[in-house]
Structure formats: C-alpha cells, structure tokens
Amino acid sequence: MQRERETYDLLILGSGSTSFAAATRARELGKTAVMTEARTLGGTCVNRGCLPSKNLIEAARLVYDAAHPLYPGLTPARLDIDFPALIAQKDELIHEYRQQHYTSLLEEQEDSAGVAVVHGRAELVDPHTAEVRMPDGSVRRLRGEQVVIATGTSPAVPDLAGLTETPYLTSDLLSSGEAQELTELPSSLVILGGGYIALELGQLFARLGAAVTILERSGRILNEYEPEIGIALTDILRAEGIHLVTRAQVELVSGDASGVQVYATVRDQPQEFRAARLLLATGRRPNTANLGLERVGIRLDGHSAVMVDEYLRTSVPHIWAAGDVIGRETESQMATPVGAHDGGIVAENALAGAKRTVDHSVVPRAIFTDPQVAVVGVTDREANARGFDCQCNTIPLSVVPRAGAIRDTRGVIKMVLERPTQRVLGVSMLGAQASEVIHEAAMALRFGATADDFIDLIHVYPTMAEALKLVAISFTKDVSKLSCCAS
Ligand SMILES: Cc1cc2nc3c(=O)[nH]c(=O)nc-3n(C[C@H](O)[C@H](O)[C@H](O)COP(=O)(O)OP(=O)(O)OC[C@H]3O[C@@H](n4cnc5c(N)ncnc54)[C@H](O)[C@@H]3O)c2cc1C
Image (cartoon, rainbow, N blue to C red; front, side):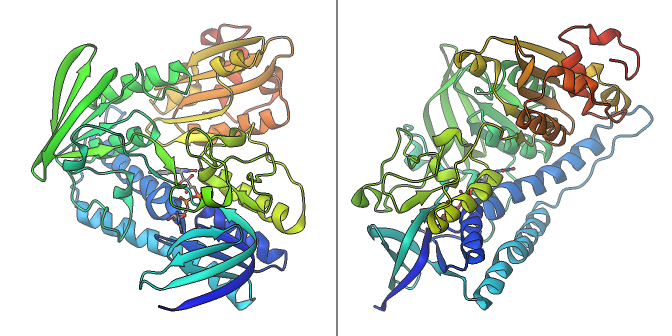
C-alpha cells in the first residue's frame, strides 16, 4: 500500500462547482489547493444534475410540442424516439462540457502550479488531514492549512418497507458512465415525491412516452412555493396526462426487474400503483456521513447539513463549508450558482482573511418544467412569518400580451409587497420563459425596488417580462381592462 503525505494551502473535499470556485480563487490568490473526488470530476451539476436534465427536458419538449402544436393550421407530428441515441448524445455533451469547463481548467491550473485533484473517497483523520482511499486501494494523506467541505448531497432514500428488496432509480439515472445511468426508456414510471426533481423528470419521461404516476405525500406539489404555483402546475401536468396523486402516504413497495408495485394510502383509502420502474425523488441528503466530521468537532444541523456562520466557517475555525452540503444554513439554496458564488467567498475568507459574509436573501431559482417555475425573495407565507405587513397579488398570464400572441397563456405570477413602503419582497411565476423573466425581479429586489419601479420601467413589448409590470399594476388596477402597454 502506497502512503504519501502532501501539504496544500487549501484542502477541498469534493470537486463540484463549489469546489472548483474555491480552488480557482485559491489559485488566483497564489495559493496551492487540492480537491478530492469520490465519483466523477465536476460533481452533480455537470455529471448527473443540471446539464443532463436540461438537455433531455428540451428534447422531450420538442417531441411534445411537435405532437401538440398550439396553432390551428399546424398539423401534429410524431417524432420517433431513439432513446439509446438520445442518451448517447447526452453523454457526449456531458463529456465535452466536463472537459471544457472542468478538466481543461485543471490542466491550465496545474501548469501554473495551482490545483491538484486526488480521486478517491476522502475522510478527515485530524483537523488538517484527509486520508483518501484511491480506486486501487492505496491511501494518500493530504494536509491542508485550511480545509473546505464541499461534498454536496446525494439522493435521500426513504425508510420504506420493502425498499431494500425492490429495484429503484434515483436522479442518479441521469449520470453518464455510472452503473445507475438509465439507458432504456421505461414504459411506465411511478415517482415518489413532489419536488422539483420529481416534476422535471416526471414531465420529461411522460413526454417521451412513459406512463407516469407521481405520488406526493402532502396536499400539494411544490409545498414550499406559493400555493398558486403548485395548484396551477398540477392542473397543467394532469392535462398532459401525468397521473399526479397528492396525499399519498406510501406504505410498502415490492417488485423485481419485471415491474414494481407501490401500496399507498390515498386520502384514507388503500391504493396500489404498478409500473415498470420506481423512481425515488424524495429529496437530497448532505454528504456528511463517514467524512470524519464528528472526529474533528464539526457540528451538523438537524438535516445533517454542515453548520456554518455568515463567513461560511464551521464550528472548527480553519474548516469552512459551502454549496449543497450546508443545506439551508445561512438561508442558502441548493443550486449550482450559489455554490459557485460561495466557493469563492470561502477561499478568500480562508486564505486571505477577507471576512466576506454571504447574503442569500436574493437568490433567483427556477424549475424547468414546461411551463417553467421561477421565484425570488420570500413567499406570502414567509413574509408573514417574518413579521412583514405585506400585500400580495396574483394574476393569470392570460393578461400578458406576449402569452396571448404565442398562444401559451398557461400560468400565473404573484408579487409580495411590503405594504407601507410598497417594496417588492418576492415574486413567483409559473409561465413560459419564467427562468429568464425572474432576473429582472432579482435585480429589482437587490436594489430595493418598489411596485412603482416595475410600473415606471418601460418594458419591451410584447415580452413575458411584462408580466412583472402587470402584476405590479394589479395592486391598483384591473389589468384585464388595460389597453396595450398602458400602465
Ligand atoms: C437532477 C438534478 C437537477 C438539477 N438541476 C439544477 C439546475 O437546473 N440548476 C441548478 O442551479 N442546480 C441544479 N441542481 C442542483 C445542483 O446540481 C447542485 O446544487 C450543485 O451541483 C451543488 O454543487 P456542490 O459543488 O455543492 O456539490 P456537488 O456538485 O454534489 O459536488 C460534491 C462532490 O463531492 C464528492 N464527494 C462527496 N463525498 C466525498 C468524499 N468523502 N470524498 C471525496 N469526494 C466526495 C461527490 O462525489 C461530488 O462529486 C440539480 C440537481 C439534480 C440532482
């Protein structure tokens, strides 16, 4: 067994977008850094998250839109689906993207003596040292003056009767080159969970031809979002033929390679659901187990996320954490740009004593269903819980000229205002191009804009962004009775 010991300015556990941001900033500061990676370089987003899901979601949209043209005069067309070829292009895309945005960066950085990667599972054996068990069984000891934990999350597997004997998929089905990758289109799929991964993947597979059932435990999907969004999206998904069941308490699962059965209590009635495959989309769990965190005194919160302060410092002064592994600590969100932003902060705080604090109050987020969901700031419920005297309005997108022009009026937009100042506290939208529109709202929140600021801003006509102006106007006028572009 080979044993080495190496010392770096920054020892980073993980190699996802958070780690890359930290490593890159370390290099810019003239410091040395090492990343460790137990799976594939680049982490979740590029290998099994954002990139593959958005690639396949768009392919499925093309299939669906061809079969369901919104315009009379266009004849529905059936696009043939070669699923293995679709998966192969996804894998190729991931490979190219990983090479371009991750691997090649390292090659450049190593030239300038900055960042190294050690492949293998890392565990802290003392507050400055990680042991990395390499694929060939050898162990390398890496020492960091400062340490960053950026090990991300993994699919949470619920404690469910029968699950250990039943084959199941997780969002890891999107991975490329790993055993969990799905390479055959299932004829039917039962999905447990009603969060964004369940909905994105559910609609994707339904549009590719699978019979999809989504079982959500609570009374509505997207529980933490504005209720208007979950309710409207439920209708849209059901209209597409997805069997979406709420208040479904799963009791037992069983099955084998030929199919699965899910036994649930739905509104007090026992029900059985059968499908070719079972997909678990019941949340994500921080990768904090077997990392040696307890050994070195790092505290976790009730969701097993690493606890950090506003500088992203853990309970051990020279150990920092950022990205998905901190969960909702410091009001953070589990999303790639958050980790990529905060990874840089961590490196500056750790290596340059920058004392930068994180601000997660304005983090725009999107769900890539069709239509998309996008949100920023607080919801009605959150604003009330925080003691704001607030005022909310929701309008249907049918009042937005662009939506009418493109014959896609699905969705709603809701705005939350602080009543005395009319400052905008939050915006939630379900509708075409919501993930783009939300940036105007995010910038507005960042600079403390009021409803009048949205109204006074001349918007391009006709765009989906006019939804923001119209919802702002709706606090004082009936927007269904406005002439074109009027405020
Ligand atoms: C299906 C899906 C779709 C998504 N879509 C989007 C989207 O559209 N937009 C968006 O912003 N976000 C999306 N996300 C979330 C996004 O992928 C994550 O927020 C982001 O990847 C987190 O980055 P990270 O660097 O913190 O962690 P990760 O990218 O998870 O990286 C952590 C790395 O640490 C490694 N690791 C863990 N333990 C060890 C150990 N002991 N030793 C060595 N290495 C270890 C892991 O293997 C992993 O590669 C999606 C996620 C999923 C699952």
